[in-house]
Image 1 (cartoon, one colour):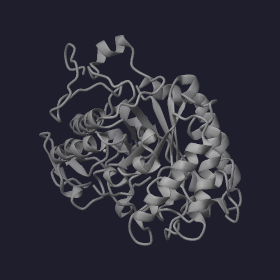
Image 2: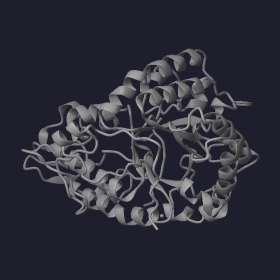
Image 3: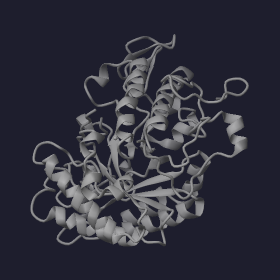
Length: 436
């Protein structure tokens, strides 16, 4: 279901995980990867729409039914079988191997509270069995996993990605305490020593809004309580615990480490989501201006990282621009304002080389910013329409393979990549369009 979302645009802490995935030396020589590598950085991907349905990502699941979110879908006859089919086919162990071959080393896996507690709801259970499978696949492949609580009781944002569109009632009644109980269940299982080294993080809550009925100060206080509960429940004391920034900025949560104990400060991180597609101002930018803005993110991200670990939990290749025959770009969508031009929202399979180049430039600028100024990043998404489909974009040459290679190094004036011979080298959902 298309949904509403919003985008508002922290001594450096080096967080080293037990092991990481990298391109081989031979691949480095062939592709020209970043010369300096942070052995702890997560180069990840989201599995949005798998265990928490998002209609715009997997429209086929909703074919022939009157439902717009998981809450309404699960109440329908035949929903259980449709879910099993979707869960068992949309993402598989073979897909993990495919991702590893691209240089991706981590998975961010959204899941809803109802997978563990569906009392007095229409939600169907069973998703955790597939989360467990995915963690096992990742362990076999040497990838890391973030378990991301994407939907909370009462809905933390009113978006379909929380499970239920409508009012955000998470801060009412016992919903916050119920959420902590679910997180304790997740932490006892995936924060156990059995999964240490694979499950490296648990995200307390995805995208709680900071307006309307949702008080960000209440969310921040809850974050301290939830952190302490998860830390106590998890046997793996090196587990990273992450919180989304509530669309405010990572700086808003800089005080949390001090509230949970300075000894744990490097194990609390902040997740921010960065898109340039839905804000009215972004819609007026050409691609060079989008690239400039992506490079400019580095200042705030780097400042945040100097205080606590910071991650970009979601970002994408998508902008609203058109590319003219001479390679210049203008803000806009199909139909093109200039004869012979092509827009990002056109059929991706028909993208011409000039459009591919411009989208690749934007992708690489974001990657350079994230590599230099964060502890990790997760592109959105594994599967979806057009430029939201990771493998389609890799195969099209829009996303680098490996993810550390560059065709257009140094766009942000920072760390460059080694070149070999030749040329080898906010918020999702705002305005209710293509969101996840």
